[in-house]
Image 1: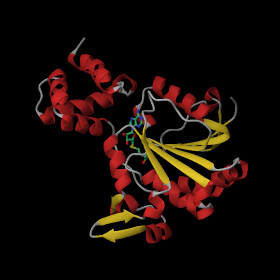
Image 2 (image 1 turned 180 degrees about the vertical axis):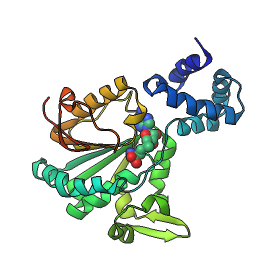
Image 3 (image 1 turned 60 degrees about the vertical axis):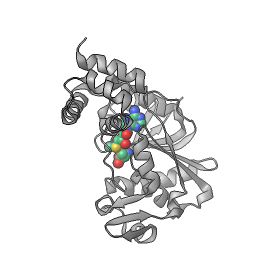
Image 4 (image 1 turned 90 degrees about the horizontal axis):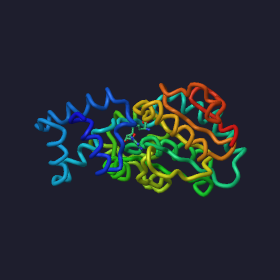
Length: 259
Ligand SMILES: C[S@@+](CC[C@H](N)C(=O)[O-])C[C@H]1O[C@@H](n2cnc3c(N)ncnc32)[C@H](O)[C@@H]1O
């Protein structure tokens, strides 16, 4: 086994994260660049150093996946969500609308959902769970501090109503913060909660191998209530959605049809 393969195996034992489930070429390229930047000649040396240096380990976790996010990323899809998908979900929901933002990064996505849902529902009528693998991004999300560039596509009404500007930073209001519950969750290893009306999982499945992706589609399908909807990223259309128990409702929106 080569240095990288041994590293992947030992890293799994250490972290519970299976790097084999991510597309190898991309992942390896990023990891080699990071290892070289840190000055380690081999992955095994790098891993050894992580055993005693917690910061090095956390930095690795943080860089392992790309954390870039924005409020209202691909605004046309959010418009579709508001105009076509949400009314349908509200009509067919039984009780509270349960929403999950999976792989939420620094919070732009679940907070966008909170602002949008607040326009149509009272806080008592919905709940938003937001999860990510990475503790560092979850902490940032809870802080709710953003650079202007993250807000570029956010409707002005929301910017004005829910943000306070201090210097170059924009702080999200407590009113929105308290509508989101953040938790750590690994999509490739942890148990999924059930009975969601809407699961939003965007711009993470592209990093997974085909096999891992298929497992996630199936787990999301089980986690949705019948008629619930999965909202995926702009390059993540599901090929043959029926195979996993979905019907395409609109591009990038998939409805649970059986099971
Ligand atoms: C590019 S961000 C996407 C953020 C947001 N969903 C969006 O579309 O703007 C990808 C996120 O996926 C998370 N991630 C990567 N692998 C994961 C896994 N196995 N389980 C949960 N989250 C994961 C990363 O930590 C990162 O925050």
